[in-house]
Image (cartoon, rainbow, N blue to C red; front, side, top):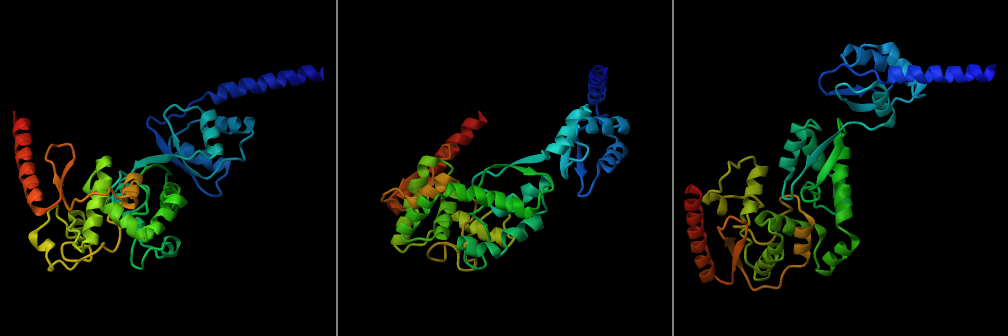
Length: 341
């Protein structure tokens, strides 16, 4: 008799769960719902009802209890889809699978672009991000010179960032990725070159901004190392742009005065010798490797080919370079005419 009663109760509970668990949310659009610290099942149900996600709070509570998860709801922000059933919502809120936002930082993005992207997606504020990447606590960890930011150390990649994540965790996520990519062996190779990690990342960032063509990166690297060895100025336009960005003076154009001593920015590689104070953008692995292992070339100049494919023409001397510049102008003219037809 007791056995039959138990079987009956189990079937009854299963029937109730099947009926209630399949009941759906009533929101017509995806909703981001926050479970705050200290929220109970009752307070969560009240908020779900008030925000128009569910209209049968008692059934929601029954499903949670039948699932044995009425006391297991975790804090966080969850995305509730239109028509999502109660059982799935409860499973989501008790599993800790909070809503994440996908964000991609392309190679060559600088901290200003990263901050804007994060702000636009509502992950964190621009000023909040900028303050964190300039926090001196990272100086000792990476041997970053005083006054420098984490520019160059935030690895460009695709990240899934939990909604409303603390900005410190966002930065740590990117630094952890950097630590994975820049291996101990690579760091040893840097020491073998007689350089610091900061110097290599600075060179890598210039390479990254000069070309997106991977096979060219070691050649561009070779050009700049040749200039350093010959005691020439780097004369790298991307460093000029970065200096202007720091001073909030970049309007999309490089003026002649920006290339003279009138421009007192420490990033003015047209007036100052050696590397600039630090990286000017994020860097991918290939750019870092190019900075560690430059091609053994005798080039000192390069200019865009004008073919529209991102490639460059490399030259050994001023005469060759001037010819390459003329070729660039002609190729650009031909490309413009072809596009106009």
